[in-house]
Length: 179
Image (tube, rainbow, N blue to C red; front, side, top):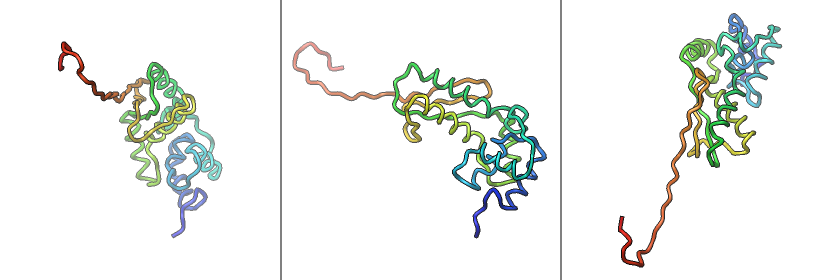
C-alpha cells in the first residue's frame, strides 16, 4: 500500500472539500497531520493552500479555531508568568478547549480522518515556546509542574507535584518527643 502524501489526489480532494469553510493554515494543515511528518501544521496548510490555489484565511476569520492559534504566544506568556515563582526542573502543558470548537473539530474529523486534535497542537506549541524561553525540558511522565491553559478565559492553573523529604534521626538525648 502506498503512503499518502500531501500531493496525492485523495488528500487534495479531501482538502478541496474542506475549503467550503474558511480555515486558517494551522487548521487546514492539522486536518492532515498524520499524512506527512516533519512539517508544522501551518506549513502543511500553506502547502495544501498553494496546491489547491486557495486564498489565505486569517486566523481570526477561521471557522474552526476562531483565532485561537494566534493566541499561542499569549498562552505561553501566561504559563511563564505562573511558573516564575516556582523552582522546577520539568514541566508539562495541558489545555482546555471550549465545547463549540471541539464540536466543529469533530465535524471536520469525520471528513478527513487524518487529523490531529486542536488541543494537542495547542499543548505542543505552547510547550515548545515555554521550553525555549525557560530552557527547561517538557516531561510527559512525572513533570514537576503541570500548567493547564484554559483557552476560554485566558487563565492558567498550575498543578505542582509535592516534594517529599524522607529522613532519619537518632534520639541521643532525653526530652525530645517521639512525634
